Length: 65
Ligand SMILES: [Zn+2]
Image (cartoon, rainbow, N blue to C red; front, side, top):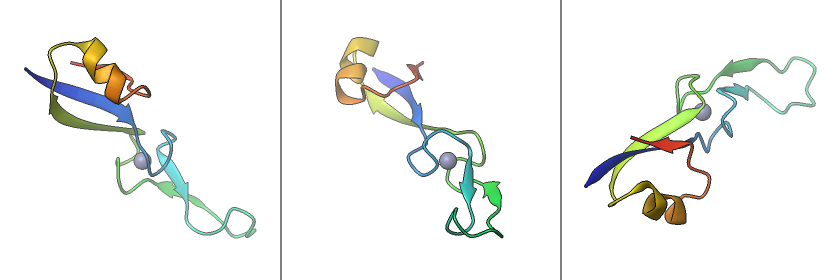
């Protein structure tokens, strides 16, 4: 069964924003994460029978639908 697996965005670690340069740089600004579009989440379809099986592969999973 196809499940929609939702995990925290790897790029921004679920924050939804990224620093546009090194955070120690005083002109550093937060920009919207280009990977998740500011959502802080990534989702993809994977084949699992139930949520427990998905959790074994993705312990950081937020939810599956
Ligand atoms: Zn992101």
